[in-house]
Image (cartoon, rainbow, N blue to C red; front, side, top):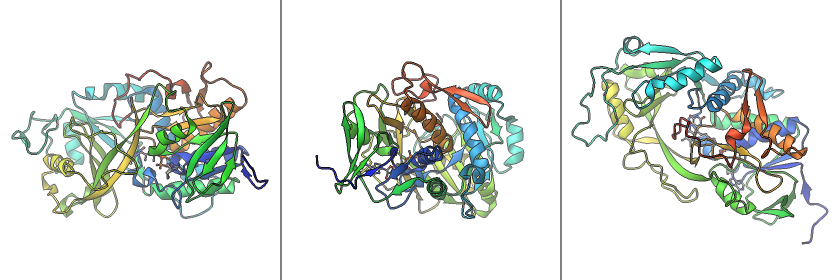
Length: 439
Ligand SMILES: Cc1cc2nc3c(=O)[nH]c(=O)nc-3n(C[C@H](O)[C@H](O)[C@H](O)COP(=O)(O)OP(=O)(O)OC[C@H]3O[C@@H](n4cnc5c(N)ncnc54)[C@H](O)[C@@H]3O)c2cc1C
């Protein structure tokens, strides 16, 4: 192939400028690597990141998942520090709310999450239903679970006099603007020397002797690098196909939709808006407060949540026929809620794996790395994932065989460490997972 002397060359190409790709570019650039993030969108954070509810919580079902989220909390809680020399005042805010999770038989009354929190020294409080009632005097604390559809004759009829209680995690909250947060990291990366290229679609991954050479854009532009990172979010599988490795991983990714409804609360309930993030497993709805007396409400942990695979370029972008069900169910808990005439909300895409645990790994193609399958729960961890991937890439490119000798990654803010084969592309499906977005 004819090659111009003007071919751009970098140490690493990161495909994707979502929160994951930007974080990886940032950390590699801080190591002095010449990096470029390439994205087909016009700016950073416009893929699935832009629809994220950006909840930062620590109650995962695995030690590694919780440990990574706990480390992530510390990054969000000190966002300006994470961004280093970015002195802009226009940075995303972390709103601390805490998270309350209702205990049910189905979630084993959170016994696993309580044990993991103790092990990792993550603060939590067990609240009786009486205590919950003190915080939420308008709530109907009878049990309605397990969740059923509103057209079921038993809908709205309590199944027990009271819910068991809940676990409150004070160290939780949400980022008010996930796209701005991503752009903050972009700016920090640029200050560290990293480059970005937008409105550019990677259409080919060039390789030779099982080693990446670079990428070709859909307009024919050639960019070379010995390292390419797949941080393409819901397009991860397509990128793997371009690299010719789609058949070589034991764990695979696929794309599903998730809907979250945006609800203006009646004035009697407005205190919820600046209140606690709630995962109400009894009714199968979660609440994420927003500003101006509004909340996001979504479905979580019901038997009728739809996880059929969709095409990321051709999926239903409107709220579906069961879209208002999480609000009906929430109406059981908050009778004053009222049901809006018009449903508004977001429809986003999750790139999920079989066990809802991401893949952070090298691959069978030398120089091709994977930060994919984020399973609807890796916004919070992204700042740490950048560090984790950078250390993995640096080690592998220095000759370390991560497949035979899995690396350990030290979580320096919280003082624990995790074995990175937990995120391996070739792990067996992890049965400790919740097999849900809770990870
Ligand atoms: C509705 C919703 C709610 C969520 N809520 C939470 C939450 O509360 N807490 C939490 O922790 N996580 C949450 N998540 C998950 C979290 O947002 C994602 O895990 C995270 O944003 C994924 O980031 P990413 O960078 O991997 O993907 P993306 O943001 O999708 O970025 C990938 C980028 O790659 C680009 N790209 C793809 N293919 C190509 C190509 N061939 N050439 C060039 N560019 C390409 C895309 O344009 C895109 O910008 C939620 C997700 C959704 C959708």
